[in-house]
Image (tube, rainbow, N blue to C red; front, side, top):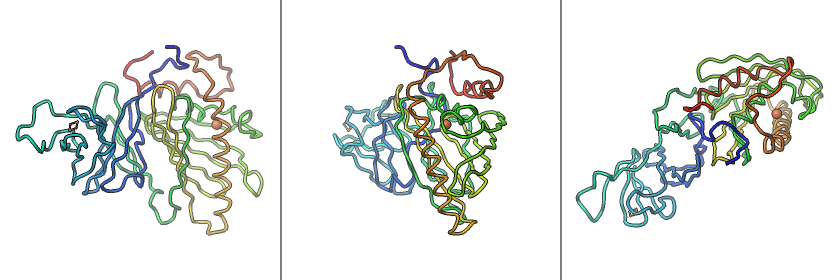
Length: 313
Ligand code: FES
Ligand SMILES: [Fe+2]
């Protein structure tokens, strides 16, 4: 199939499966990520689990009519009960559980208000941990505000934005390109930029510090007027579309007066997203683009992203 990308659709890493508040105790949520049908459910202990959606018995979809009982999910078709680790807890009409009664349980970690799922194309265990983002849940910061987009592209291509300093002028209308320093350490990529940004009080020079933790989680800290945090997450839906979401939080340190400015900064960042999307949805990824010397640090970015694919292209 002719895709616009030489690299696979599903990198290895942690990805947002849901925001924590989208899954209450006793809830089952049907998900479609990595080209797979999945369910997330939350047991009465508060723990979240993710399993393949289709019951290993005769294939019913656990998210359609299934229910949570304690830490189990109960299939609507013949009542088999599944544990969060993928083992079968009980068959209500048979004492002997067949040895093959196992379904795929996906590694899950919940932090920063997000339920993350580990995807690895060869089934390998998680190879890195996600950080605790200190602003989230702190009294000094506003609660996360969430925005979502379904974009016809792959995040590792979209995210190249962080090092693409020149596009700020042509796509986002800034007067100058940011000065960007890029640093890579294992699965973490840090980009520190200084640039002019818009606000109701006119333009100001702000800092944008972007840190990627693998292919599915990015924090962006904007400083200059009101300190702003964005938690950016992107999860492949299938080989064409990505579920992209930004969650925002503002520092309360400037008092109420700054909240309007903060809201304007967020509006500007949302506007930038709207400007980027048509480019992303229609561009093609060239493995060997023709770059000029002022383009920025594409080389480091591309080296960093290769580590999240088992097979190289
Ligand atoms: S299909 Fe799930 S119990 Fe039969
Ligand atoms: Fe952009």
